Image (cartoon, rainbow, N blue to C red; front, side, top):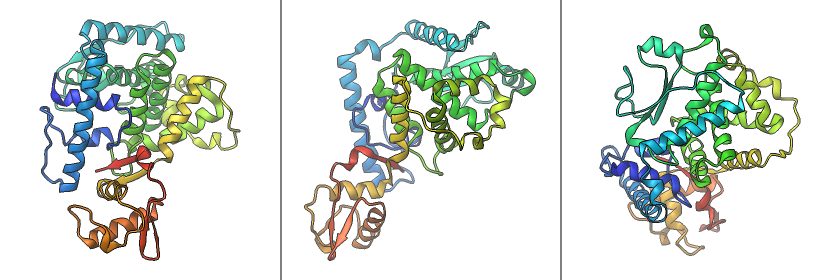
Length: 355
């Protein structure tokens, strides 16, 4: 198993993660687990090294406590995948042919060099690219707690594809479809306990939720907020109803239809959990690495220090002053009579980081 894959598994099982949006962070980590340091600042390198240490510890702990989870065979994975397919298709009363699932070293042309964890090719896409229709998982990232989340997302694409006439199928899924499949996939993973809940929480927080306009996750972020509103107003059955409408409908979907609906109090425990996880993500603090570095250093310093009394490694006084000003704007530090204070020393559990 690649060292990078071990770190990825460790990231999904961390109990209190403080790391960047997963795809953004892992683009700087090579297959052997070392950091690509080019174009990174010393503070960013230090941050990545700290996170790698945490992920290693998490993986080793998991390997000790649940070796069967870490060392699942492909046959065991395919059995889990088949159980997932059965459950997902039962939810939509689908009796059509199930999607073929393949674990591959490289995705079909022209995506051979793509570093995604999974891809789904509907009938339209398969004909366009000359490949077999179905779901592909990248072998080096096939690991329990990760593969199920990726498969759940792609399975929901397949479900929606089955509800979409061929002439309405598109080469690229509409962003609102991405939000729909994300939410429904996670809902079914929660409902049927296919993975540990900590994996799902980390994926929502640091796979999709920890992003801004510069990050890849922003492709899903805005629509995910809208889908959360629909989940709150109409419950999970309303989200499933939209999925049944197919790609053509989702491509033209208008949120104005939901502006006058009342927010419900979900009776379904799985829905309640999912709403709480999404709400957590959308209300968290978002810092860049420099701000996090300064905040983590200041959290260890007694309140009531002046700027001249503060000492943060690798930073000049002016850089420190500028960063503290940004933290003050975000409500994470405050100034009184030219001295600095921390309003919340436990805030680190709700911080998201962008590199």
